[in-house]
Length: 58
Image (tube, rainbow, N blue to C red):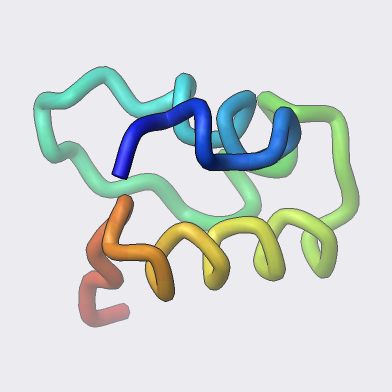
């Protein structure tokens, strides 16, 4: 699956991750995107569901 098959908002979210595998909290991602935590959580869940991100234990 290419990143082009993702919506622009999901591509924007995925671009925050630099490939080092360092985990981010939903709050950290929300702050970077200037979005609410709920909207950010939904984006992250969609990326996990599409196997673009891996959920880590909290």
